[in-house]
Amino acid sequence: MYDTARRVALVKQQVRENTRRRQRRGIYGLSAACMLLCAALTQAAGTVVGPGQTAAWGAFGAMLLREDAGGYVLVGVVCFAAAVVITALCFQLRKRENQKKDGADKPNRHEQDEKSQ
Image (cartoon, rainbow, N blue to C red; front, top):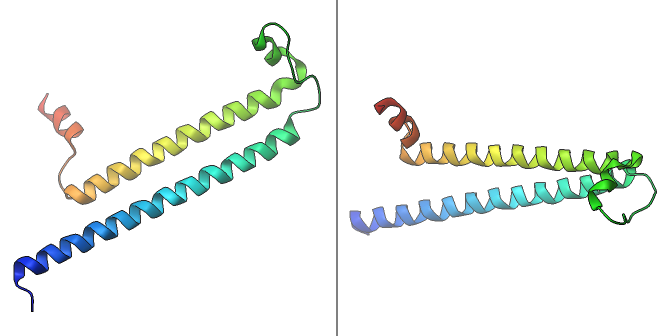
């Protein structure tokens, strides 16, 4: 039989391993979601963007002024919006994990600073 200190150390080690596994699964899930989003946007760009001149001479910004460039702009805006949503979700997940780790009843550091002022 193990003594209490050894059992506590084993439990803490198991908790760390479980946390690492959960974080790794989250990273793999987010990576798969990003790859899926990239593939979907690539397919959408192929259907939205019409055939035409692919190279612009002179100022490259003028390419967006062409009539069939709306697809490029649409894909860019959708990519930006998706990145904003993924970033916000990551912030929420980190905030939730920090609250679980520190205790749900304790306010986070930012809220403590606001209350003290």
